[in-house]
Length: 148
Image (cartoon, rainbow, N blue to C red; front, side, top):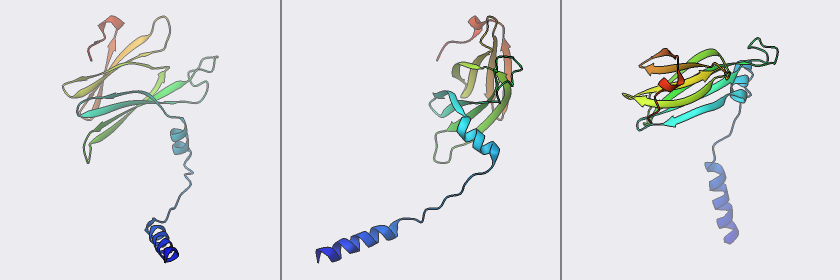
């Protein structure tokens, strides 16, 4: 009786499992993206999350003799919801970007970054408004808002 009960439970458990399948991804761009992308910064707000991801270009892409690279930045925004509105933006070819701060202003994300990491870095304010990205150059790091 015990063996019948055990076999019945085992068979019902085995039959309840979905059939597993897989597919090898051969698209070189997707392979490179998923193997090399990094989260540079992430910030959670009351109604949405912002992730800034970076994907380095090939070695030497910055045109320097020291093999430095350019980076493509992806800005991913997702609401918190059962069916969230999600957006993804791509900014190509920044030289060694550093994310300084991510803030929220009027329910819109603002990202401050600098590049390159030299004695005279450039500062950039990236504001996401609806389905657009607005860029503003900042001349002095002291002008970057610091409130969270």
